[in-house]
Length: 241
Image (cartoon, rainbow, N blue to C red; front, side, top):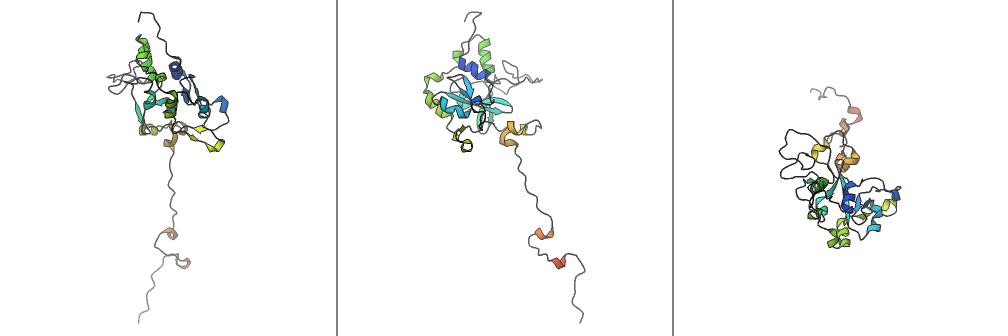
């Protein structure tokens, strides 16, 4: 590629990396589960689960929340993009990758960092997020087709169905659909953080309280207590003969 040429991102990839997810859908602002967490690769925009019938035959991706940031399941996105060398994270028994880079955290240990934002990474990964890998390819002046696998080559309706086999009807608000696991459980080292809210942490922040046992002799099993025997006194002995 000649110097000065600009590498253009496909509209769907540009939209996926720049979209603001988990905002309220304007078409279903009074419905439950109305956060925009599904991205249409054909229409290049996000929508809420209630809009799903409008994109029935389109290729779709579901975006989830993980420790305050947007992530996508690795087994879904790697069907259309080469995600090698992007550091994954395991949560809810599935691997996810971050869509965009997170705030930079400096560290004295610079043995292995992201090629784009210098965030500390585990070996042998080179990118902390999908956007960092895409930006690196663009900055190097390489052709993005080298990492785009192309969802157009597959059957789009089958691709869409494969992503949303877990969808179920929501009968509480008169129909519609909801997406499972839109908020992912954070790992144990995030649970200890006092800044984590129940909305962002999902079910991981729910504390199950064990009911306390009532005190008192009347509740001790195996011991009979009568009203006339409440005070402890001297034992009664048989009279001497």
